[in-house]
Length: 92
Image 1 (cartoon, one colour):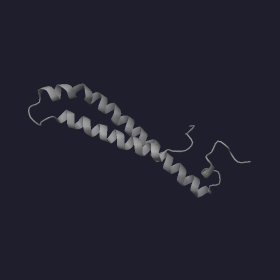
Image 2 (cartoon, rainbow, N blue to C red):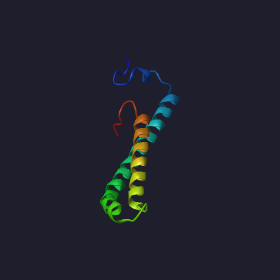
Image 3 (cartoon, rainbow, N blue to C red):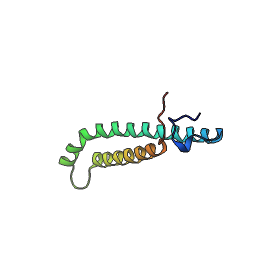
Image 4 (cartoon, rainbow, N blue to C red):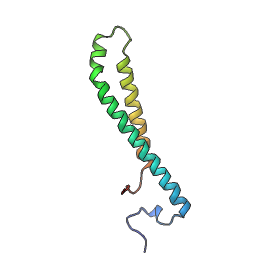
C-alpha cells in the first residue's frame, strides 16, 4: 500500500531518485539557514541605517548599502531554499 502522506509524484521513485531528492532538499534547507543568517545580520544593520542616512554626506551611505545587500541575499536565498525544499517536510 502506498504512503498517502507523500505527494503522488514521489510515491514510485527509484533509490537513485530518492537520493537526488534528499540532496536537493538538504541544499534547500542549507539555503534557508543562510537566509535566516542574513535576516539576523540585516536586523542588526537596521540599527545603524537611520543614523547613516541622516548623517552621512552625499551618496556615502555604507550601512544602507550593506543593509540593502543583506535584504537582497535574504530574499534570493529564502526563495531558492523554499523552491528546493518543496514537498514533504523534514522530520529530523
